[in-house]
Each structure stands twice: as C-alpha cells, then as structure tokens.
Length: 387
Image 1 (tube, rainbow, N blue to C red):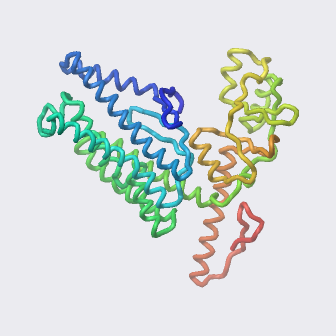
Image 2 (cartoon, helix red, strand yellow):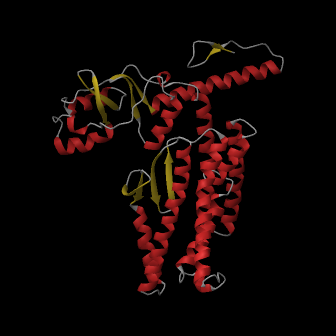
C-alpha cells in the first residue's frame, strides 16, 4: 500500500504501517495533554493505542494463518489508523474454508480478552464497573473492553466485516456463491441504512460506518459476479497478443513516444527475446526528472514482478493483481513473453461476458414465458454456441 513502510516480518508475512498511523499517536498525545492529563497519562494513552494495534496485528494473523492452512497466501498486513488489513491472495470459494478464515480473526480477540481477564483476576483488577478501569488508568481493562468491542463490531453480519463473510459462508452451504453474496450484501445494506438513521440523530460517526458498509456490500457483489463470469477461464482468454516490448538499453524517450502514441502503459523488457522484467509507467516521471530522456531503462526494470502462464487460472491472477496493486502482468511461455494482461483487458472481458450472461437470462425468461427463442449468441470466451 502506498505510503506504508515495513516494521516487521511475522510467520513469513511482511507487516507494514501507514504513515497516517503516527498522526493518530500525535492526536492521542495532544488530546490527552489538552484535557489536563499529565505525562504519565499521555504515556498510558499511547501505550494503550500501541497495545491495541498489537491486538489488531494478531487479529489479522488469525485470518492469514488460517488461510495458509487452506493453501492461500497473504501478501502483507498493513496497519491503518482505522485498523488493519490482511491482503490475502484470494478469498476461498469453499464456504467451510471461508467460514474458518473469516471467524479466525474475531476468535483471536476472544482469546486475547480471555487471557486479559485471567491476568486481571490474578492481579485483583477485575472490577470493570469502576470508572478508573474504563477511563485510561488501567491498560489491561481498556484492552479487555476494546477486544470485546472489536469482536462485536467485526461480527456484525455486514460486508466488509468478518461477520458478513461468516454469513455468506453459512448461506453458501445452502445456495450458490453469488446468491449467497447478494443475500449477505442485502443484509449489510439494511444495516447500513439503520446506522445512517441512528447516526443522523445520535452519532455522526455512524454515517461514515454506514457508507463504509454500503460500499463494501456493493463491492463484494461485484467481485462475486466477476468470479462467476471468469472463474472457469484461463489467462490466455484475457491476454493481449499485440504489445510492445523494450530492451534494457533503449532510452526513456522511446517509452515516452510509445505512451503518447499508443494505449499500452506497462512494457515487458526483453534481452534477445528472453524476458527480463517490466517497465511501468509510474516509474517514468521520476526517472526523467532524475536522469533525463536519454538515459536507458536498464536500472528501472521491475525484475521481481508478478507473472502468469497462458493456462493459469484467470480468477487467481485477478486476485493477485488486486492484492498487489499491479496493473499489468506479462504472460510467459518459458522465458518468452507471449501476452500481456492488464486491468483494462479484464474489465472489457467482464463487460462482454456480463452482457452475454444477461442475454442468456433474457432468452430463458422468454422460453419460460412461451415466447420464441432469440438468435443464439456466442460466449465471449468460447467457440461453442450458447443459447
């Protein structure tokens, strides 16, 4: 994620923190001091926030390590002021697997709360009704309460919270994946409307949460339908076969000319026909500022880039592209580039297959109503006639 830097590597997973997280720490320290708190109270507040985000990391590791058991990797974990994000390479389509991956995060918070409860009982600090325990004088009590709140919030049956994924997984055990997603999304949108109504009269923060939930529900439906439209396709069905490549010793001026005159934005770099890496448009402005138009692209090649094979799963490639933020991926046959997959290609393919699917639905509706069949159409990725 842009603006983040690595702070640790846990169980082989890189953990990043976004720069805005430090604004949160500054705000906590400033607000505590401004309200009359002394240095000790400021330190307690900061320590509580840091401990809280330690719990968030453990929560995300719960998702990541459970996904790993089902053969799904995690790109990284990033800490943000609003929480954490574990970027899985893909979400499991098996509802049982999705259930366990989704519930693993909240289960970690339950375990943390249980441990904190035992520690506080042993220390004689289990009087949670006292004002001191809930206003910052007890880090343990604060963390206990916060972990319970995290469990309740995350288990709300609304995307993109874990509870929405748990609900979809349970529904998908009885119906198809897209229908389960649409039903779970509808529940989430109804909750979003409820949050918005309450937020108008009680707490404006709920308006933000309502928007977050509503958009998350819509996004999950789009992703589920995309998976249905491209789930059985291989990479070669979406790749460009007409594309421009560069050699490492070509000048940046050549890339500029190609960008202006064509529609391709990222370029495979090949040495005597063998793939070397990718040159990406995002690297061009800084390179020109630093080195000028006549410098070569040799030192600007992404040599450790994501690649694909023609017979690979297109759905898995799309998930990896989204989790890594890559816009274009070279398709290799051995060490030769045979194609290029871009987000634009994928969007166009999804648009065509969506239209074809809608047409098939209309044909079925007319057949059910006893009307004559329409003209057969061809599936966008197949040579077989589809009626």
